[in-house]
Image 1 (cartoon, rainbow, N blue to C red):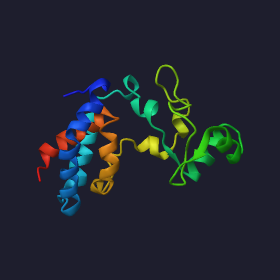
Image 2: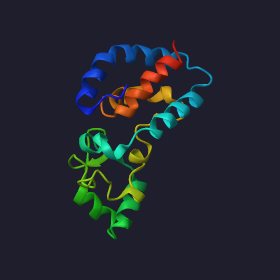
Image 3: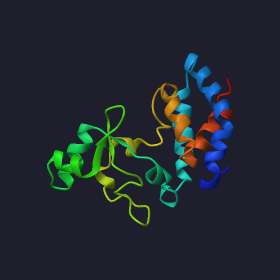
Amino acid sequence: MKPNLNEIVKLAKDKHIENKKYFDKLKKKAPKNMDYVMQDLHDREFKKTDCLKCANCCKTTGPLFTIADVERISKHFRQKPQQFIDQYLRIDEENDYVLKSVPCTFLDAENYCMIYDVRPKACREFPHTDRKKFQQISNLTLQNVAICPAAYNIVEEMKKKMPL
């Protein structure tokens, strides 16, 4: 199944309770081979997914910026870190640096990232479906399935491959 962006929020909402129960069980007892299965599911999904056709993550959410991200990106712009912060970022409720606004300032009209080579770690790792100990980020994953069609597909395949 390849949900389109118009369907993804509704599908994720419809599956939310089912997914939450699944992830609650997963937290209690994760399969031994889970990291390998998740890596395989992630790799297979992203062989057939073109993020440039979607970019919904960049259009609807903003990444967290670590201090290392700020330093790397500000260097790229030949700015002092504080200049970059003042120009592009704000501090959110959890005291993290985030973009002042979405869609992402660095997303161009063709869905390309203008700072791709120096993009934040959160962007490089999104949707985090190949992370080790994947069960530890279930709340994040529950959010991401409503944003990213690939994450939605990976979770649906995961439930088939690793029924609990």
